[in-house]
Length: 523
Image (cartoon, rainbow, N blue to C red; front, side):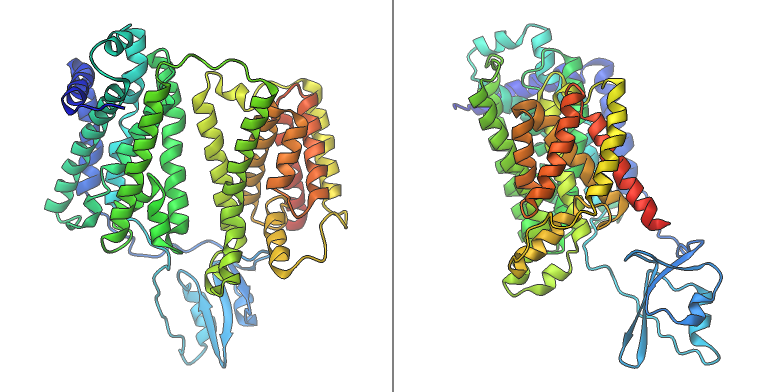
């Protein structure tokens, strides 16, 4: 793919000039400045008093004098405001702050409670990450207009017929908006440094790469759009999710391996731009990984720019695409949920202990939802492509029946494989927690259920049919509980099929079952 700098710069100048001219340019510049200047200069003052909840939830070895206090409630789960434990003859109380009444109950007549303040073990990005996030978030209009606007104005063919290549056209458009965001980000960074809100450091290196990865993804998503409206719809749906999901996944791995977290494209650059990790290594790794990500996306965008719409898939093509989706879903699901067990097996049990099951389920569910978001961003009918459409009225009655069947099936013994090695038994328990609402927090369970139904009943069942979707569900979600997985896949795959391909009744049934079991346990 031939790339000539002079033509790339000419395309970039032309693209920015078309958007910046007139009131649109004034509006874009004003919005960018109004968002970035306060974020860079306003001081952030922590609260002087710690937040005290109305009721104090306690867990562990709680003394009777604390339980007798008004407002103190013993938790029925593994989460609480205060955790009580013992270290030899000493009592240990862990929590963000110790309310005065609890301290008085513990001290008695002779105060003896020693307060030790510790910092969180997980890294927290600084305010400069917000500068990178804002500079990338204001680009939706320019990205949507970059290719869709050219098609609607009938100028794209003229450009491609001129003495430029498709690669030069795409790289020029990417350079235009990446450069605009980089200037805005460094402008805000200069203000933050001059006002004393930030220090000069390696975070300046990955700062513009967040916008660069966002623009590259946006151009790829809008490469087939025919007008500005459809381009804007795609950008608004996917780009915020891209920044959020990659940032959360990178932050999830930051406490385990900063290098692995920094290597995640876009998300790693977002955290590195916030001085999350000291030194140059993470900043350089995040910059290089996002640059490589941009290069691959730009190459693919240039290759697909004027390709005709793909014909309807044959069954072989649909099966091949279903296999690809299943493989990616397996990686997204298994890595955060079961991969920590491998660290323990390799002799680093501390890493495994620091990653309980629930955060892994949340990260896996967010990864599946990110897959769904990218899928919806690539098609002209995003909601129907994921099975999100109107269902027959009678199918909602079937959803209630299916929820009751699922609640009963949760208590059927013998649906899991037995006699497995210790490592696989632990993996079985972690994977089971993602389909059994009693094993994780309510929010994590509902998030996991939503992600599973959208990918397997909404996407894969529409793509490859009920049988392919059922097999994929068992292989990815319940590989060590095939009978339980087959029961789930058959029940909700059949419900989706009878609902004319709508995933909504199936999703509602799993939500109902989850809420019912959780309410029963809480009562």
